[in-house]
Image (cartoon, rainbow, N blue to C red):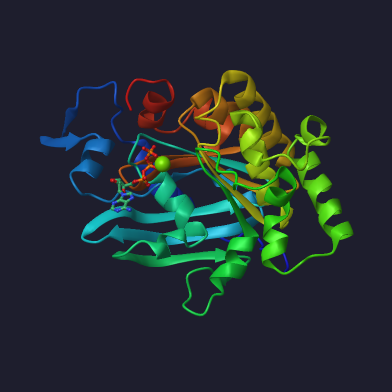
Length: 313
Ligand SMILES: Nc1ncnc2c1ncn2[C@@H]1O[C@H](COP(=O)(O)OP(=O)(O)OP(=O)(O)O)[C@@H](O)[C@H]1O
Ligand SMILES: [Mg+2]
């Protein structure tokens, strides 16, 4: 499929951006008087049910987007968890999703490969497009879609089978039994996941016999075995010790270019180290989205700075 071309985004409207930059900042008192009226801070207005436009940095428009999320809303039963989220995910880059617990990061990630379909009572509005094709259309082959989206969860989840069989599992499901093909994919995926050197002599031992950090890299190897377009990583390091976490972080940086990576993390240093772009979410809203170095050094919104510097959340 051809790579999607950058498109004009409704939130690049500079009038809107200038408007949002006039917001009082979080270091001010929680409400400020403007022309005799009391104006609440942005996050309080959102908590009170207002919808404010996201602060999307214009640099994102220069990137070629592989995935485009358009006015996406999601409800769990009567409870709305995502509100008009619009964002372009640049191809071949690492994009980090950050924000306080419960702000909808995992919900957004799971929506991209339609895992929320499995939850009763979930309803969505808006669209998500991979290479300009809707992910959410009823006729989408969800199995094929999930092959294009490798997903890795917080807790490593190797299957109770050998290291080799764990890695080639996606191919086995497709009916691939040619030994030479499976061996080639196994080695390539384990090398890609920076695990080959550690396990090449024990491929037939159980995946469960590996350390936590090795198990997580095994899960990444399994996720890349089917050569996905996008890797979805939901807090991939949070269950790991610092050394293992560092290896997985290095791996994420190495995978960029070859894959598009969307990674959820609570670790600000990690987001700053591994990602090219960072999106800050709050209560189901996308607040600010831009280049990682800008989000962490001079974000447009004081609320973003307050979150990344640990003043709240
Ligand atoms: N299966 C579900 N059924 C009902 N509500 C849900 C479900 N999953 C998540 N939610 C709610 O949706 C909101 C967003 O949850 P989500 O798990 O996406 O947040 P998160 O940003 O990933 O949080 P964390 O950082 O704690 O993982 C929360 O209010 C949560 O309670
Ligand atoms: Mg989560």
